[in-house]
Amino acid sequence: MSTIAYIGIGSNIGDKTANCQTAVECLVEAGRIIGVSSFYYTEPVGYKEQEDFINAVATLETNCSPVELLAICHAIEDRLGRSRTVRWGPRTVDLDILLYGDLVMSRPDLVIPHPLMAARKFVLMPLVEIASAVMHPVLNKTMLQLLGELQNSHTVMKCKLVKKHHDPKT
Image 1 (cartoon, rainbow, N blue to C red):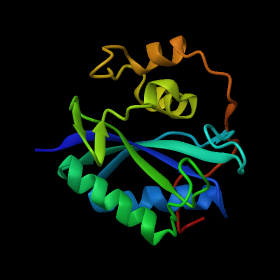
Image 2 (image 1 turned 180 degrees about the horizontal axis):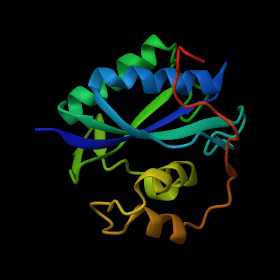
Image 3 (image 1 turned 45 degrees about the horizontal axis):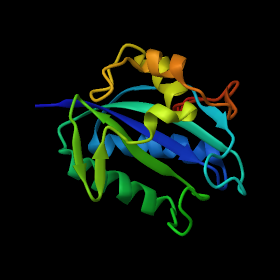
């Protein structure tokens, strides 16, 4: 049985847009991509001494378990050159499982829903774009309600004219 999962995507090293596009393309290893938000320029949160990010969210229909999905996300990050040296620091690509159906789980290596998603404008803005009515299974609020309640001032702006999918004909 398939499940709808939402995957947060981010990059702030190298060709950030291309890194995010490649990550989206690689996510087909875990299932069928149903949708991808616009890409957003985001100022860093947490560790501020780094370049701005490009962020997006992908909707994935998957037959993978949450743990299998996490393993695929980590493998994609590794293949794209992710180095885990500084918490919330620079990265070629970051893939986070934000939601996995209405599952609520907590393990040392995986917490669903993502524990910080409701406090992160760079997650909620792209998520609202593609799934505004989806409910947070713990907070019992829609993504649109969470974004509306967010007391957060960090800058998140939709990128202009970013091609989200590679089309070999263009």
